[in-house]
Image (cartoon, rainbow, N blue to C red):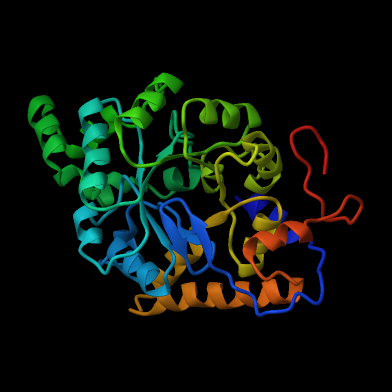
Length: 335
């Protein structure tokens, strides 16, 4: 977790000059155009921080004209989020051990106007998360997700008996998920499907082969495997493997607007923003999340101007140069 942020802080950029017109931070991402290259990351159980949960973040993203991704394990339902003012929204999905449950999540997203499916691949098992163990924190026992109220889940509960958290533990995670399963999901939906948790260039190539509409470079915020390289270190090799055929997004470690510029300079189309949103939610102030998002947009535009970038894509010309001290090594050791 700390390495994600440290690598973004370490990176330096090469400014250009005399760019001309003021910076325009808007960018086209999967599903449409947003005011700046920022999407709220899929984070479950936001009701732990604010009783209004994901509806606050979704509303704020729409007001700031940025993107929002709803977690499979959200406190608010997809219908609750869809009832807030419209915006560009993605739906994150895990391939559970119950195909009917996975199908329900995808079909619900289609019906409610979500623009894309984001399949998270990096949880074959849940990381040990020793802080949760030390604190006796069982997230599903403390705050069951909205999923347990969905009709297909209630049917499973009736069939199996027991507590909702026990059924959740039976269906998630799914260590048996295969590339064929992901390909089947891609072919079964009319929505574009992004694959999240891609860190290796060979996985990026495989994702392209099965028809992924985009890749999200992510180590799950550093919460899964503490010896993983940072998302930023993985980014250049994944971008190279994508060969410009699909957009690449960066998740894990983004804390400041300048981090967005770093990610875009190395080929990301946009970033997914996580922990800062949760911090804003935890204040309980109604406008805290939208204030944060507007700050990110304004400061990112200011950073673009200082770097001589009129459009977000111009930041590619500001990437760290070999020997500058700020280069990011890929899996092969090149800058």
